[in-house]
Length: 308
Image 1 (cartoon, helix red, strand yellow):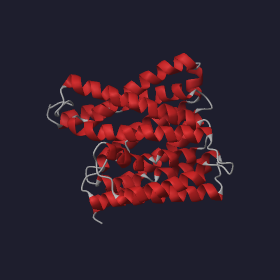
Image 2 (cartoon, helix red, strand yellow):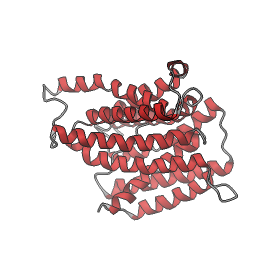
Image 3 (cartoon, helix red, strand yellow):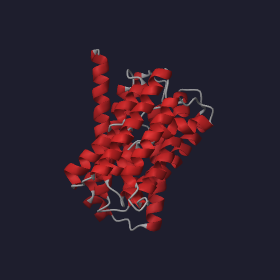
Image 4 (tube, one colour):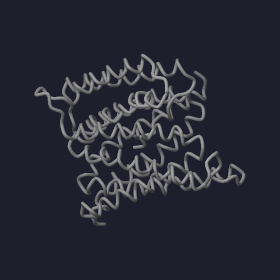
């Protein structure tokens, strides 16, 4: 392994750790504010935190500007708004689900988007390998052990987070098509702003929004907005200049393990042996799916686009 590859892998591992611990922040934030308020503030912070990076990249591009690419400005804006709407759906279902489940379980269930992407892509004419189906079977077996109780019922929070994984997968496919046609950092900033605006509209409609409670929960909110979105997304972009997308995806699936670790260290969450076995099966399924993609194709779906 050369020095550049090792550096990229370390950056991706740090990104996975930040995203994994973000589930702990999301869980902790619910003690102070509602799920829509939490998302509204953190995605707003995330959008603003990317502006310095956009300006820096614009200077390096010798004035070409952030809108270079094959899409016209108006069309790029429309598609950016669309990805923001899908992001809002995924983030909302995930955030509400976290109220009723643990950070560790939410981290692993969300990670199923890695397998859902190629399966949904198959319906759009993309090739799906046998390894993807094998990974899906392992992940489903793990999900059963992790979330389905002995009375054959699935917990409410787990079902909501599982629904969010579907939207994360759709989001990845949209980003995979759109990001090569416009500046990905600009795309990220716009979609975060759209998600923030929709979340705040929902918050004022169904929650009590107060500056006092936001300030009381400012630590997990800042972590979710600045660290999980601003810092981790930037690290991912830097790392993937040299890392193969499928290779990056394999490392980023470790966020589920970090979510379990963070839940245990910071929230005293303890998973049963049955649940831990389920986590292991899900992680194995995700890795099998991504390793197959790595060997079959030189290109794969974008990694980590669920953007904690």
